[in-house]
Image (tube, rainbow, N blue to C red):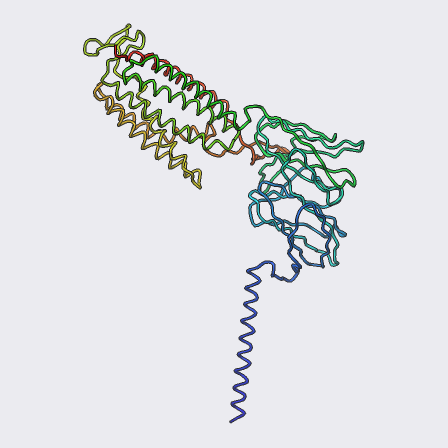
Length: 521
């Protein structure tokens, strides 16, 4: 009986030990799946994962069928250059992986020594890049490697060459028509080779295309677009350091302060004109004063919009504040125009030719034409009022640009309908069939989204637009996206704005002449 109890206890104890071992094994498997650095498969073993930095050569060895990983922190929109010298070149490889956005770079002629390995990598948003070196050989491999991260060019730059004959990289942001000059010390030796690249999005990765090159130790380029230009320097034999001098010459309109100052100068001139005009017409009635004030605010809005267009072309950081100021000026100008029109609705009609006051109850003709109590331009009031809420909502930051434009368009539709009703209310006692303004407002509201999307498609403003180019290779055409380039305003958009501005100035001139007729005499 005692033996039976001992046997039962032994079986229970063994079952408990077996259950505990199974639990521990499954827990280890889950931990390995959760952390790739602890993963061990049938073929490879991750020996280590350590952090490294640029400008330092590294020597290491790797066991057969093993993996070594190194991590480096990358800034955004920078290029990572990796060079490797191994004792067994045929059976070694480099593989890059990154937790953030980025990808390998293809280049027609890789800037690495002959029969040596290297790789280029682009980081879009920055982050931690993991460099993986695999040994697919049956013997240990000794190797040397280095990393280089492209840095922004300053007035004078120097970089160490960790591995002989391997390249180093720089980058610089240039505006359109900026001129960059780079020179290296001339000491009678063979000068290093300088290549300037631009970056494209290509298939699943990125592509560096040569923009300019020089083997004379100096180079001068003119930027065709606002973009980030990457410079790779191939050093001379056994050179340990690269020192370069760089200078940038920019036209005056590429200065971020040029367009705000230009707009300020126009505003000061307009303010001086408005002050002199009001001072010389002290007997002007309220209708005339508010008409002059609305014209003055229109000139300020026009000058601010010129500044916005110029700042948009160079993508200056003052673009957002200037756009907000322009929206405020537009709202003030529109409100003043509406109030002036409301005050003029019962005033005598002013002939735009001879500036005589005409009583519509006595006659409706002057200078050979029939005069109306309102101008035909009031039919544009629904569109003008619809643009105001559209611009106001667009100034509110959104995470999604498409959603921002869609909500702004809805606000513009509501503004068009409100503009039609307001136009009807102002003109109902002045003209017959004033209800036509409500119909115009509804039609404008229905066509407003199509008009906005047409403007976006044609003018390439209010939303990010990528510069695309057609690349042909072996009879096949590819569409390349120059991801860091900023396209300027199309000539058609500039021409349309010039025509519209000329028309607005003409209308302001006519209204100023009419406003002076509203005197108390």
